Image 1: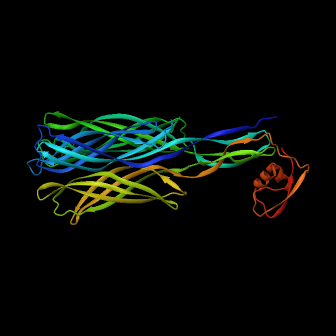
Image 2: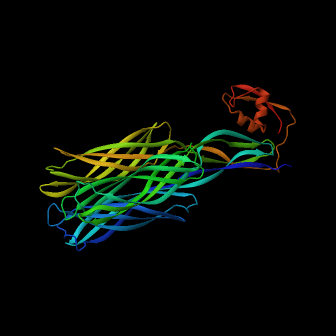
Image 3: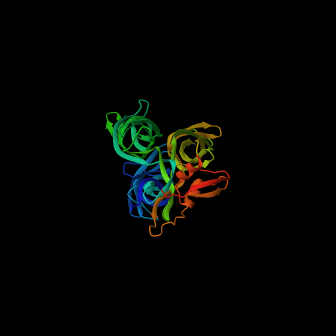
Length: 507
C-alpha cells in the first residue's frame, strides 16, 4: 500500500518578542584638569549615549555602550564658557520571556531621559543621568507548510499567497579618519564643548548580492577658542562609501540603510599660530534591512478520500513589504526667552517617538529635545525646549507597521522679539509592512486501520445551499473536488441552490 508523502516548505517569518523601553540610571564624578579654570557656575550638563554592542545569550540580552558627558560651566569671567568632558560606560541586561534562537534580531535606540550636575567643590562635579533604551527584539520562526501530497487518496486545497520571505539583514562596522580644518574667520581651537554627527545615505547600488552605499557624514562641533572666550561652531561634511555583503539580495528588494552607531574622537593638532586643525576618527556601524514579496502556493486544508485524517492547521503570520519610506520632516517651535543678546547654538537630541496606523495613513509623531545656548545680561545661559513633530505618510495598505530610523539633519534658531524660533529638520527612513496571517496546513496523518466503508453506489445526490463551499461538500463526501466539479460542469468553488451529483470514487 503506498504511503502518504507530504511535501513541505519552510516559511521563515519574523515575530516580535519584545518592544519596550528599559531605564538605566548612572552616577559619576568629574574632576577638572589643573589647566582648566575653576567652576564659577554650571551652565548645562549634556550627555550623548552611543550603543556600541548587543549580544544575545539564552533568555538574556546584553546592551553595552558609553555616554559622552559634557558639563558646560563658566569660570571667573562671565563670557568664558568651558567644559569638562568624560566618557561613562554603561551596561544593561534585559530578560526575554523565552530563550533566543539563532536568528534573533535586536534593535535598540538609546536616548537621555535626564542629566543633572552639581558642583561639590570648585574642581569636582557630581553627575547623575538616566538613559532610556528602546529595545525591540524579533525572532525568526519557521513553519513547515504543506505544498503537495501523494498517496492515500489525499486531496489538498491550495491558495495563492504573497509574503515577504525571508527577511535579510546585514551590518558593517568601519572607521574613518580625516584632518578637519577650521574656517579662516574662526579663532584657534582651545577645547571641545560638544559634538554631534549625522550620516545621510544618499545613494545605493545593488550588484551580485552586494550593496554599494554612498552618503555624507556631517560633523558639527561647539568649541571654546584658545585662551577662552565665547563658544564657536564649525561644521564639516565628508563623503562615505561602503560595500555590504547581503546573501540573496536582488534589485527587487525594498532596502533601508541607516547608521546604528556613530562615535568620534578629536585630537587637536597644535602648530605655530595655534590649533587650526583637528585629527578626527569616526567609528560607524551601518545596517541594511532588505525585503521583497514572493508569490507562492500552499495548502490551507486537506483530507483523504479513503481514511479518516487528522490535520495540523496553524495560523501563520505572512507580512508583506509595501515599500521603503525615506522622507524629511520639518518641526518648529518657539522658546520664550526675553532679553537675548546673542544666540550661540541650538543643540538637539531625539526624544520619544511612535508611529500609528490610521486607515491608509501612517502617522509618525515624537519630540526633539533642544538645549539653547545664548547670552543675556552679559552672561552665557541655557534654556531647554521640547519641539513636537507629527507627519503623515501616504501608504496603501491595512494593519501597517513602521519602525523607522530617525536622525536629526539640522537644528537652527532665529532671535525674535518673543524669543527664539526653532527650526528642526529630521530624516525618517524604514520599510513599511502590512501584517497578515493565514491558516495553513502544516501536517497531516491518516488512520489506515479504519478505512471509509463504500456504499456500493456509483453516484449520490446532494442538494447544495446557496454559496456553499464545494470543497466542504467534497470533503464531507470523501470524494475528489475535481471529480465532483467535472461531473456537474462547475468552474467556481461556490454553489447556488442546486442539485449536485457526487461520484462515489476514491481516487
